Length: 199
Image (cartoon, rainbow, N blue to C red; front, top):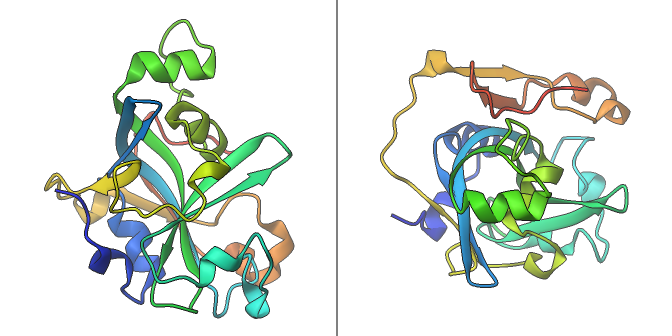
């Protein structure tokens, strides 16, 4: 079952980031279906989080989509090579987002291997937000995409994760955010080999 709009428009982005673990992310790009189970996320709050692109109500051409009602994609480029896929949450003008950092691949694995230039499946196929987007064919064309549509969407397959299977810790790569860099807003499935490795 596709996650409905109401799932994304709730106010607690940290809770949402946890609840997205065990949900399934899919894309249908160039007619190819690819996707898998979300195993790692990070929460970002537009209201009180220096790590968030919209901190202090910053509005730019890049961040404008963050002020939309939840349920759309925020895709941006880092290092000039990697696109990162974020899910906008909360109501309009709140600018909350969840970065999807890793999935456990399920469908379209052959296509993911082609996109990554791999000959065989490895645990870093979709472990990390940059390589995840390459594998799923996510780029700037999906900026603002409706997450209840047919190009990129999420599904609930009824998987219930016990609380003790979820780990929490500081987010990765946000040292510039001062004390907010220490917030335990990164969530991952303990022992899952598809979770990204901190460099």
